Amino acid sequence: MGQFDGKVVYITGIARGQGRNHALRFAREGAAIIGLDIAGPVAEHATYPSATTGDFAETIRLVEEAGGKILARQGDTRDLAFQQELVADGVEQFGGLDHVIANAGILTWGKVWELSEEQFTDVVDVNLVGTWKTLKATIPAMLEAGNGGSIVVISSVAGLKAMPMQASYSASKFGLRGLTQTAAKELGHYRIRVNSVHPYAVDTPMGVADTEAHRIFGMPWVTPHLTSVLDYHPVASLDEISDAVLYLSSDGAKAITGAEFQIDMGNSKV
Image (cartoon, rainbow, N blue to C red):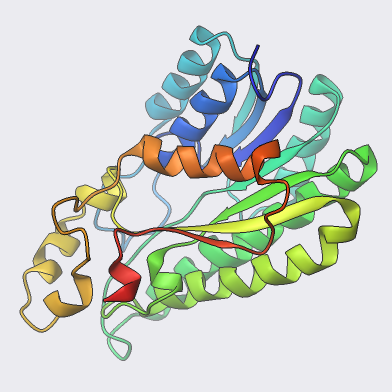
């Protein structure tokens, strides 16, 4: 018996990294997965490897290998009609929608006045507007089911403490805090809880294989902003993030909404 037996979970950005791990963890606990990922280049200015169609196919294989049911399609969170169709088809196939994990996001680097227009708008459109479209596509299905449930929005420590060289990313992640708080207040009387998770560095391609990040982290004036309390544990594992996501989605967190759950090794406190 799994703690999410019979539940249906919608996850964005499932091709690899955090999204894939969340999908696997929920599937192992008995949930059916509805998932999406663009599984390709999102923006020309990204300086880390893009997810691929092969990554996407591997997530599906791993979920099914774990005994899970999954409906997954390649698509962009910025495409509201695509998300609405995927939700409708998933609800028809699995019988409802209980939990949403708004995970998809991108990152770019540069000083406020040196970012290109694309570097700013692409990141805000994917991270903030795309997450709003995820909520717009999924909340009606949750309300129609009338079973309550939960939404977890993946923000960042950069949404708690602005980071240098990350103006568009920080702006988008701060925006997710406001979106999460508003949704929590609007959905509480429907028994739907809404919380945000705020990681620092995570063991993903975006987290550890970004060539521009490695260059910027070596700048002496940037370093003080990037230190943490737990400097002996600089990068969180995927399971450390998924542990929080599953907890916030579980009955064990039934008294928690509007929370900002930090997994940042204390970086936001430095």
